[in-house]
Structures are given as C-alpha cells and as structure tokens.
Length: 434
Image (cartoon, rainbow, N blue to C red; front, side, top):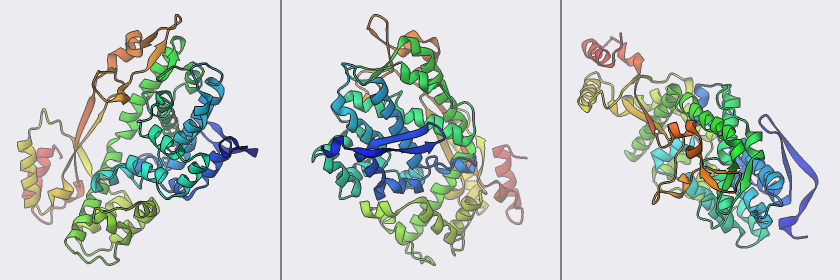
C-alpha cells in the first residue's frame, strides 16, 4: 500500500473541548503531527495578548490546527464523499493543508510581524517547502506534494474548492477559531450551529456552498464572528497589551541598533534586530523564549525598556480614551506629543493611537482579491445565489467596514506629580481625565 493511502493499525484520537474528539486514521497526518515544526505550535498562543483580558485564553495554535483538520476531515469524509463534484483524490491534500495552514505563526504573531516586518504565511511556505521534518513527510507522498499543499494554503492552487475549505468567508479555519476562542474566553456570543452548517454544505466547482435551507445557520455564524471581533479580538485591554508589547520590541530593537550593551546578549533576537531572519532562527522562537527575555529585561539599565517589560509581564497596561480622528484633529495629537515631551514622558513609546477595523461580510467586487469570494446559497432548483441577496440580516452589514480608534497612554505617569505638575494637568484635561 502506498504511503498516501496507509492507515494506522488503530485510530488515534485527541480529546478536544470543542469537537469532543479529533480522529486520525491516516499515517501521513499522524506523522505530520509528530514533526518538531508542528509540535512547536504548542508553544504559540492562538490569541496572543488576549490572555491579559480573558484569563482562560491560553489555548495554542496546535489545538486550533487540529480543530481545523477535524472540521475538514468531517466535510470530506462525511459530507462530500460520493458527490460528483468532489474529487476523492483531493482528500489527503485537503487534510494536510488544513492541519498545516498556521504552521508559520510566531510568538505573539501579529505584533512580531508588524515590528519586524515578517509574514507568517511566508514562513508557512518555507517550512513546507524547506529542509524540514514536515517537508520530508510530505515528500513521502510524492515529490510534488509539498508544493501542492503550499499552493492550497497560499490560495494559488487551481483546486479552488479545496482552497475554499480552509480560506473563504465560511471556512474550517474561521469555524474552529470562533468556537474555540469563545470556549476558552468564556464568552457566549461566538457560538453558532456548526453541525447544521456542515450538514447543509455542498461541493461545487469552485467553492463549498450552502443549501438554502441552512441560510439561518450561516446568518448566526456571521453575527457570531461580528460579535467576537468587537467583544474579544478588538477588546481595548487586549489591544493595550499589544501596544505595550510592540513598543517594548521597538525599544529593544532601537537599543540594539545603537549598540546598547544588554546585561545578557539577546541571541534569539539578533537576526530579528538585523532584519536577517533565517528559517532556523525563526523556528527557535516561541513564547517561552520571548517571555524569558522580557523577564530579564525588567532588570535592564535602560528605563524605558525596563518599564515596558515590567508593564507587560505584570499586566500594568496603558489606559485609553476614545479618539475619533473625525472629531479630534491631529493638532490636538501634536499638542499632546509636545506636552508629553515637556513632562519627560517619551511619546514615541507612551502615546499611541491605535485603530481596529473589521469587515464582517463582503460580496465579490470584480478586480478585487479572490478571498472576497462571497458565500453562495444553493437554491432548490440548483441555482447559486449570493448570500446577501437572500438574507436581509447579511445585506444590512455587507461591505460595511467598522473602524474604532483609541489613544493609549500610561495613566500612572500622568498622576505622578513629583515633577511637571502643571504640564501633566494640561495633558489630563486634553484627555478628559479627572
């Protein structure tokens, strides 16, 4: 029997709080899970700094990746199998792409990406195609198989239906992270009827579609996503944690570039600071390593790095006020910037305007990126209709981007009146603080 078709002697299961059990029968999947690159995802949190807001949000990219795999396994084995639009030969490709889709995420991934100009999707491609244990497992299937898996994850594959299972407006990735994140944060609004959605999902030539009878379950899913973004992912305390984290990393990088002598040489950060990150360097980074340095940097000579590390480690985060650019012009921000400098508080690190933006659902606009392919409903007569044309609820939010702006600052500094008392009073007045 070929490696691609080989089954385990006995089915393996992972006990999971979201899906109850995650089932593995394929030797390829079991071997991929066992690779060091996939095991590394145990040491990367799924929700970055969200644990500073919701204390239960300690789950990992590892558990999420298994969850996405399990949803796709159920779709291809239980829903799509035997339907004429589905190619059974794409089964293993779908499972591997689902399992490995987040392989390139780093510690506190989005914050790290912004500071060091990294792209986790590029690292996912490098892990799958490079000299790695993952690549060696995939090549046992066939020489072109790693490239085929990488193309599905990169959304460049010709197999559009397979791509849509892990990357579309209703895919296994989103379904798992909404349910998983809702479970671990303890909130109620991320829940939706995934069982119903899977039952009414059907393969078509270019994407998975939903039977018309399942429209209300999809409406519930979209509203759950909307609520999760504004109540969890964009929570102002979580964003404050990200702001402190990013400023901390910016400060460490600036000090390195200025030849500052750290008490302990930041060896794991050296290639990041030099903008020359190899795959080997990247894979050595996880959140345990990063937090180790943050702990040490609480004792550094530099007062800004020391303070920011102390804030992040001990959750002494920045406070915030609403700051709508349409109401507060940039003259006010420049005035605050000057007052912070006058008060001896470096505005480059301690005055941050942060914006969050989300588009809960969008319809396809010709000429725009493919991922905006809308959700289609399969009508009883076999016709496909775009979701917002049938659903009044979805129509109401389609194409409407919501943006939120907040200004972050260290409130404790502003109430320390041992110096620059009048200047700090002016700052508080502008910010609307008592």
